[in-house]
Image 1 (tube, rainbow, N blue to C red):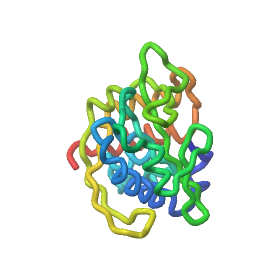
Image 2: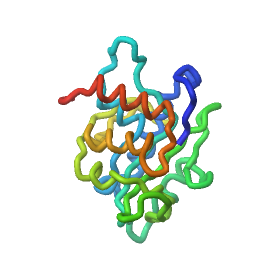
Image 3: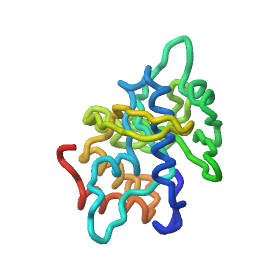
Length: 201
């Protein structure tokens, strides 16, 4: 997951670029929709108000998906081949695509109790093991996302987004849980989610 030290370090259109990557990937991964939930910075963006005094809003360069450990697309294609057809290439444990000068990433998180850190192969992508993903998959809301995809085509997608409780658990685990990175970005996302959560969209 790409994290910068300060809000101003993110490229000006980072959120819009990440959203374009989401709209591109989500439509391609239709077979997996029951097994995916959006988490991370984009989820915080979709669950919070945009007019909070002193907080400039969410920012990210990643699309973070929680994915069910048993997810499988069947015999015809896989997550990696679907996204490779859209220009995403493997970079370590992540999928990356350049969008102009910006590198955008798609990351996958899964849960495999009692393991609390490490990785698992799900379908054919490497997913980081992360406590709280199963709860996020069980408690999600469908959010309408409108915008341009990475090809400049207007899209309207219903995207499964983690509900605020599971999302906060994931963010708190990212900050201070087992293997937590203690990144300022995670603390900021928690503050934004708690301050600006919208119960009904």
